[in-house]
Length: 262
Image 1 (cartoon, helix red, strand yellow):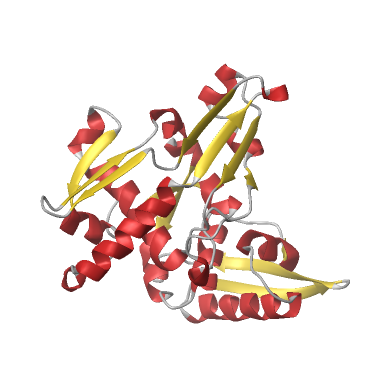
Image 2 (cartoon, helix red, strand yellow; image 1 turned 90 degrees about the horizontal axis):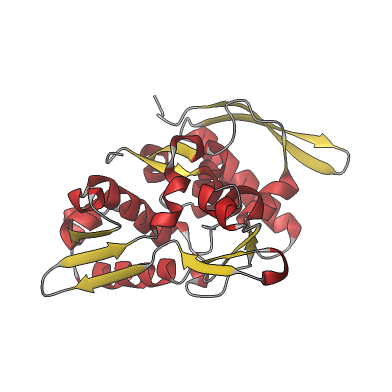
C-alpha cells in the first residue's frame, strides 16, 4: 500500500458498501446480503455462520471512501499492527493517507473525518447460523478515537476479519483514477466496481450497474448518470467500452481498463 495505490477486499467493492450518495450522509442504507462472499471466511466456516448481512448508514465516495482508504493505509503502515489490532497515528499523517493535502489541516477537515469515522464505525456486519441459533455482530471498524489535543487518531479493527485482506480476496486499487474523478462519485463507484471484476469480464447489464450504485430516481435518469460516468472514465483514459442493446436492456461491454492512466 502506497500513496498511489491501496488494496481492497473485492467483496466490499462489488457489494455496494460505498455508493454515490453525498447528499445522504448518515441516512440508513439498504441491507446488503454478503452471505455468498463473507460466509467463506475461515472464521465464519469454523463457527457455522452461513448468513451475513451488512447494515448501517450509507457511505459515500467523496468523504467516506477516502477515509476508508486512509484506515487501510494506516493499518498497513503502523508498526502497532504487527502486535495487535489497535493502532495510533497522527491526524496529520492519517489525513495524508486519506489523500488530503496538508493545507487542508483545519477544524473543518477534522470534523469531516470524525463524522466519517462515525459512519464507518456504525456500518455493522452480522453473522448468523441457520435458525439464528448463534450470531456475531461486528463492523468495518470496531472502535475509533480522535484526540484533538494530542493530534492522534486511534483505530481498532476486528482481527476475525483480517482474512478479507488475504491475497485471494484483494484488488489493487490505483488512486490516480480516483483523484481524476474527485467531482464525479458515480464514476468513482463504477471504477472501484470494475476493478473488482476479472481481467476480461462478461458483459454487464445496465440493471446490474443500477443495483450496484443503489441510486434513486427514475430509471432513465439513473441510466443517464451511468452513461455520463462511463464517458468520464473513457475521457480520463481508464476505460474502453461499448454500450449495446440486448432486447430492451442495455449492456456494457468492457474492452480494456487502464488503472495506471499511462
